[in-house]
Length: 146
Figure 1 (cartoon, rainbow, N blue to C red):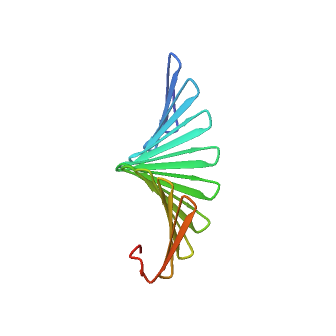
Figure 2: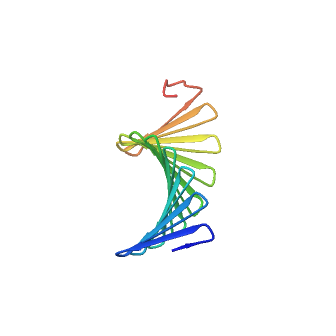
Figure 3: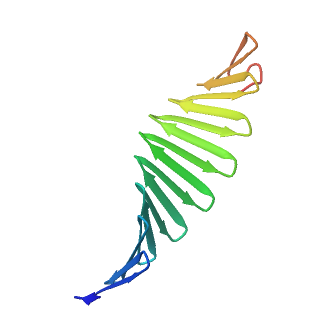
């Protein structure tokens, strides 16, 4: 069917519509739209957008972006970024980084690192190490922990 520059093709359960450089394909509840190197796919409340090497997926308030091995997920003010084996989570000024069993949390100049039952907290030149009920505090790296 052709009308006003619109081309619609129906075959089996596939519907394709082309107009002004926009191609829209619908099949089994899937809507695929391509325009200027951008591909948008919608299915079951999921919206996927691909442009260049960036893939963005949105569903139920969750936005996931993948580019060059980096995955970024945003939901309810939380931003989660994964690259290689590093996972970084940011929410309300808090940055949490996890890599190889190490968890690092930074907020307002405070850095907390946890690994194998050890908690290391650093703030303003003060290093605090806690393990097995023992608390050690080093000011200005007196104990060489900072």
